[in-house]
Amino acid sequence: MLLKILYSSAGLFLLTPLWAFAQESGSINGADTGWLLASTALVLLMTPALAFFYGGLVRSKNALNTMMMSFVALGISGTLWAIAGYSFAFGSGNAFFGDVSAILLAGVGLSPNGTIPDLLFVGFQGTFAIITAALISGAVVERMRFIPYILFIGLWGLFVYAPVCHWVWGGGWLGDLGALDFAGGAVVHVNAGIAAVVAAKVLGPRKDYGREALLPHNVPFVLLGAGLLWFGWFGFNGGSALAADGIAALALVNTLLAPAAGVFVWTLLDHITTKKVTAVGIATGIVVGLVAITPAAGFVSPGGALIVGAVGVIPSYFIIKWRTRTSLDDSLDVFAAHGMGGIMGALLTGVLATTAINSGGSDGLMYSGTFGQLGIQALSVVAVAVFSGVVTYIILKVIGLITSLRAENAEEGLGMDIVAHGEEAYATGEGAVLLNEKEAPSSVNGFNHN
Image 1 (spheres, rainbow, N blue to C red):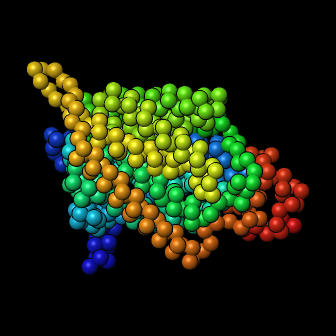
Image 2 (image 1 turned 90 degrees about the vertical axis):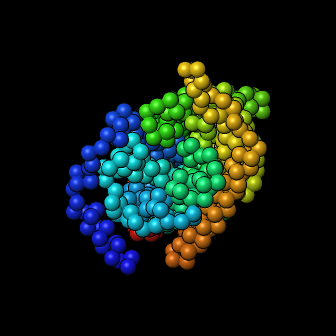
Image 3 (image 1 turned 30 degrees about the horizontal axis):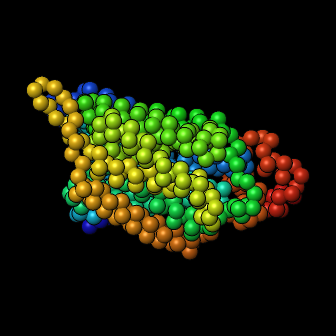
């Protein structure tokens, strides 16, 4: 039966022209469609932005490999989303998992999904699946082999991201329970943050971790990445309204204000604790503020957004300080920035949520946060964390039975750029020096250096 569905779906996907799906309907709104087209492009930009953010934070011999971990997600996660991920996430299914009705986008075309074409909704959601998988890479950079990483993000997208997406946005049990997650606090950031911690523990620390300073090689890249992430995030949050309306405007303004407040507080914390304000700190404050407002963007007032940004960054700041003194080598602090930021944002949504009202011809926002909603938000965080952690661990262990997850010490010393790609980010980088001086192993990943 499944083979029959796959066969018919493949035929529909490959042979049917898109215009055949179009329907004469007045329900598709041009303004809404235009905004979602722009938002989809903005969210896609966030993955290359993440590549610059992460790439600048690592040592030069691993810069290219780190950036490639984000770029390859565009192909792997994007393709698998169209093949099965969308169906698993948004198929009718049951309370916990979608179905195979939209495998290979069977039946998905230009007919209305709300006020936008159904196919556009698929594309917009696909950009979320891509960047969520790419986020995890920050925890395993400089030591995870590239092919096992590809296998991991492919399986993770299908069997962790898609089910969680279904729980919250696809008609699953958390959505039915009333969990509020406007643009992915739990679905994206808690999910990826917990997976990152598990992956870091399974792989173990880098060979130089705790023995030498592992410093960013290009801080301007970090700032560029953070700035582009903020730009793309306007589509991430504003587009999640799925319409060009007042809620989109609210989400967009909140996406401006929360990171601003986050940077403000992060700067104060940096100055108080170290007497210096670092560029990497400013960039991190931007990202954590963006993460914290993501679940709340369309649910809180602008004043609430300032609170979310200001309060949301505080635990992340101190977790980063603490983590560096432990054996946990979450290399680029994915949990502190995304996991903890997502947790704080989800919980603060329950406290600060508002409801749009229209009274006497004027629009406004009315406070509606409750302890009951806070409890639902906490349950959603715990459920996503447990599921993501357990299934991530299983996926990594299964891949580990097939092939080694991490590079050998000699390969790690040479740098993952040369080992995985046969290229270097910089012609005068460490890898080139080692090769010229013949200090590298005689054979590394198929390259003969004799």
